[in-house]
Figure 1 (tube, one colour):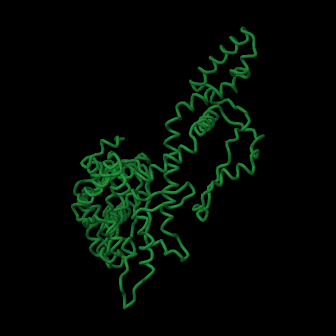
Figure 2 (cartoon, one colour):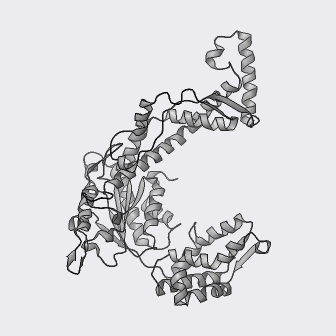
Figure 3 (cartoon, one colour):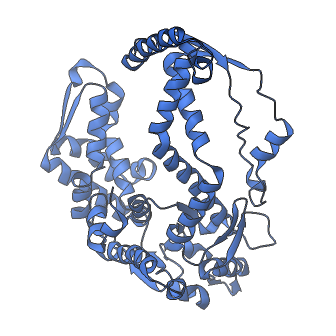
Length: 449
């Protein structure tokens, strides 16, 4: 994990290269945008608030890496992230999702993400407290309050017993034993429905106030190992306050949040047969103040969107970026075109990324105790057929490799774990035999690939 100051543009591009082949210009654009956000936070005084994010429009066909770039940079900087589709939104006044819901959902994600991070930070201390609680149950009368009422000899005896039990507990010798104890009441955890998410009240807190004693007398039975996990979770939750979680989450959203708006070309107002689709323009107008910077109400409080990084993407086959309303165009100052993938790109995609498809299938075969290898000529043939399929049919970019690989390995995946398949070597001849009838037959390719 990198520290924020270590993530220079060149470092970000280097990390993206591990998962995404090519598209260097797009990687450079998002790397600079990310670094500029860190630079803004180093600026002192009023100027910090004046520096706006470098929002980007990624232009290119499906399957060339637009979504992957956005998702990877969010993971790299551990930023709150959400992907939405512009075509799912409706203009205010119509039934459907409004554009502000993307900010509410981003905040919800950030709260969960921040809470998990803070829980991990206190988990070690919470575990020590959980050990004490379990020992109190294993050695009755040995808690600090109870020891204060005993004689010195009784205290020494209890402490010796507790120490022996502690050694056995740490060694795992007591994991088989069962404990019974009263459940700790820490309030009710309820998730509000989508229709209630915009209101600023907490359902869990409200229900806990209505039914404060609903769990008071419930007793639990569980193994020692399970009890340790139970008390660790309870103590960690007690150490992480809701107020601090919300404060940190709000700061993360407002300063580091990333919203990826896919299919933005679908809301561009294009005149067709003399008619202009006004509802698309309405969604753009609703989107404009959020991208410009406004305060959006959420159930966790108001969120300022001025410094959230917006990355939009679209194929723009019919519409053009210039078909967006001028005000929205101005809020996406950077436009980067991504290239279609060639046969050589497919070869690299099959081999170089850390999550390459060939490596994924090798892991799936290994799960069945079988080996899988690909001859270099076989990789070239797979890439050639993927490029050919994209030419003959719809160009779906790297997603074509998923259908190609599944067709190629379908019989092996069905027959595993047969003993005769303990070692599978994919050759160019096998690739041709499996894929040529499918790719070169227009009827078959239409339905299979």
